[in-house]
Length: 123
Image 1 (cartoon, rainbow, N blue to C red):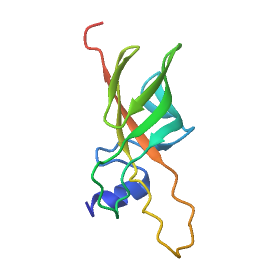
Image 2 (cartoon, helix red, strand yellow):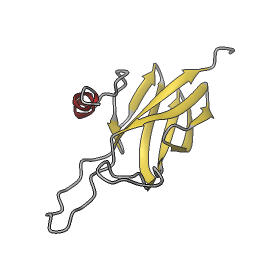
Image 3 (cartoon, rainbow, N blue to C red):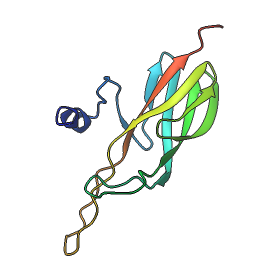
């Protein structure tokens, strides 16, 4: 995990895919992009807390393939069919640590996510 943290700090996943903030566009292939628009739900367990359930991250996004656009709400790790292939919300920065009593509430780092796209192999 220690080797992954510097990659996250640079805004890259371990596989080299760029991570983007809400409102930024990630280019997946020529004429294919996705823009995360809003966080619908982020109930993921903070890294410094032991949780019974891991929680969920759901992000609303707009996928574009040329002149075709499709809105999508995807859960982290979830995949859906979009024009030309399959879109996966494949990664996200960890949730912020839990607030501790007496701590000044620092502004949490912005959520960064990455998507992967698997094109249809049959026209």
